Length: 417
Image 1: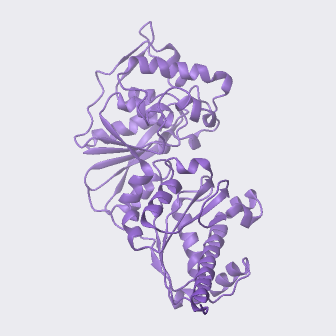
Image 2: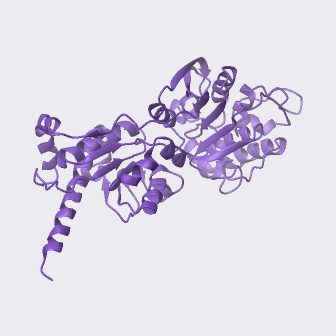
Image 3: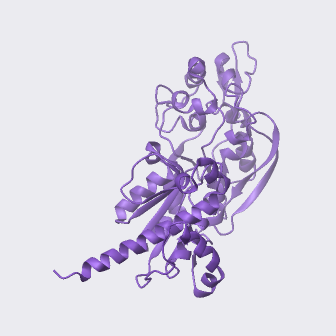
């Protein structure tokens, strides 16, 4: 694989930019009723590595906003931004920024999850690896309205096929944010498989079509590229059962409890006809798309957050860091299950680093500092209306907290014993 470079959003503040931002700095600090000047004799290496804030900020925008707030309060520190992702929406863009020479390849007339045609793209790395993000062409955000019966992954399969035809040496497939529960049937169909009912007719696209599935012909599916296939995901769910694709992720795709059994039965039909193991951890990713892909190719399933942390250089950067700041839209009990925040919390613990979390909404406890953007803004609607502004305020609040903590420690050290 080609060398991965440090993201180009790191910076060290200096007197000149601080002077230019004096007005903004005063405004930020006024929200927290703190003095503008702090003792910066103890200069810190600060690493900022948030996930995206769904529906409001990309990881890149969030990281830079937090960094501006921190630099306005502690201008002597070195701040490095490493936007992150977990294999879901935004992963390909993060990889594109981190890899020198990566380029986007366009694919026209790709059906979205609801069948509407759109232009899409995949990322080619200098070593010939193709990176394809399911959310780009089969994601739930592309739906005008949820339709789990008909939503399909066919578009994702078409882009995979286009990359194979371009001669990619390996594939990195980013699973997450899917609209469908079709077990990857759409992907298989786009790659040349025939999915037939008991009369030998092609079944319809989507989860509904799986109810009449009687046989699958994979004879015309292409081989995997020579360097193999890697799936990036943030889940370990199997395909079926109470912890499977339908039960756990179906509700967010519009599957009502009263109809869940039908969707489960469709996936059971697919599992009966394919030779992959539906109980393997991760097979339920992206509505079972991982299962469909595993039925045609030997592949690796990798935690997306760990992969991105390593390939963007974040893991190495933490060796010299004094504090790690991460964040996401909602910090709750699910954040520790393969998500960026949970993954980075484990990394920080391993390295003995203090961890701070900035979230749109904080619904779970954390041993370190947390900042809730909804509380800063006064309401969720206010936070969503100007998320960059409140992320910047949060960065300033954490920097001030660090300065106050340092001051208290110095005072303790100078107290007579």
